Length: 120
Length: 271
Image (cartoon, rainbow over all chains, first blue to last red):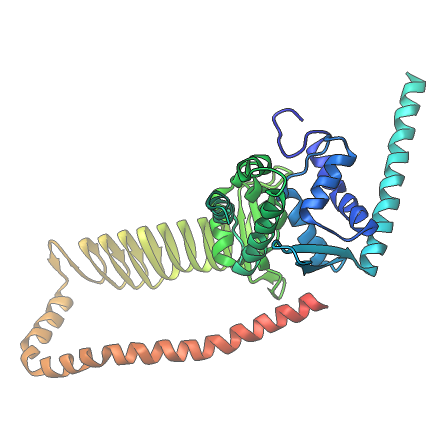
């Protein structure tokens, strides 16, 4: 989106709608902290999604509020403590639901697009 | 921590309209994030990458703008004054009405937002206590206020109307005051009594004089004034004590009711 510095790649609303799924997927693979989540998203999308802190942290708070993830501060002998997030059982269920919903939606849209192209 | 980073965090938090506990959480996370990221690059670069503090705050508020419980009344009102279209209501309800409803501007459908609540704030507000450009309520405050007790540029109140142009059944006070019982104003018109530069009523006092009955009362009052003065002074001295007692009694009644409502709201949320 030109002129939008929240994300570099996909539409802002599209990203917002899938952010919980993305964040839960990353945390489900391995417990993680804010900076690492942003870096992971940026690396795996080759910089196409450059998520801002203002977008990530509210999602983390929301997921924590709903019981999908839980946080714990670790210092690990370092000067800077890190707030790690890990997924809960409820979060795993939510992730499964969101993943199914997303894949179903992608399939539906793909069918629509392909159908339109064939008809066209 | 770097002063530039401290300033940055302060600017983010300045634009976040949430209760202190949520602001502290955000502060802690931003602090940890900047410290983490600044191990790879300079603080200035980290802050540049993070974007303008207002944008960070706007993103955070975008998430929480539906949560009255996280904002609280003052923050919600402050946030409402900063954005064009906004609606938030408390989870605590009395009957079908939210305890607090703030609504400004328009919905996404283009429909006008109307605040309806025990405490309602908005362009158009309807409720127990309604504050808005146009307000209807038991207690109504606004440019145009209509209710039991109304304060506004144009105020129509059943018991009391106070403002520029006012009308009431009981008492109207304003530049132009029209009332059933008492009217006070530059122009005061009432069925029973009126006081003003221009007053018309059964009993009135205005720049041209007063009605005969009122003149009689004034004469009676001033004749024995010297004898009654000590009693009047004694009453005036006790007035602060009387007001203090009234305030304490009001709080003693209000606090248990308020905490009971909060508990009820909390239970409803848990369920």
